[in-house]
Image (cartoon, rainbow, N blue to C red; front, top):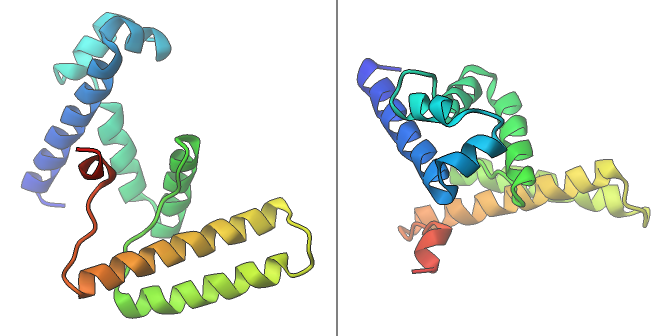
Length: 149
């Protein structure tokens, strides 16, 4: 990653961390993180490492499949799931494969924790296929907050 890219990531991560803090206020945010307001202010001023930037850099440092699993865990904790954007051909093949695996997993009529993972992977693959199809047609999907405005 070039120096300018690192700076851009650091700036955007700091902006996102600031949004988190501002959403509840420094005191409440610090208390929920078991940190002092001084520590939060030191992060905001760049004296202490930014946890958002660290999370992104740790995910970028890992093997993509491992990073995807960790990011999916974070997304599940927030009530969603992670969908990797793929090229159209790759997305199509992956969606068919994942859906076939999900159907096979639930064909016995019982749903185990492993089956739930298979279903989640199929949903993620289908979501990625939808995004790839929209991109190939030139209609990029809007982020959720754009729908609410």
